[in-house]
Image (cartoon, rainbow, N blue to C red; front, side):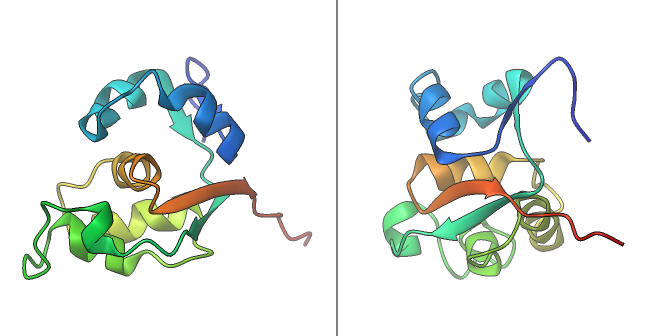
Length: 118
């Protein structure tokens, strides 16, 4: 569901257009006040290892960001990624891990997944 006061980011080009406004990975809360990711947009892994994308994260933390990134698969929608993040960590925030992964260039965001006609 779209928040009408926010810009919706659906593609990599749209992400590139706003990324420089948020120079740090920790800016996801500031980003979320002004923007949101299209829940139907698709995330694609870039091939970067998680350790490179999250140099300070520890794989042994069962509710940490490393485990969240392991759970999110190439082809997942933003909505699915947010759901998986929340399943791993109750502290996960909507679009927070998507923002961090895009900022780190761990994945790319693509056009919204088509809706199937019923």
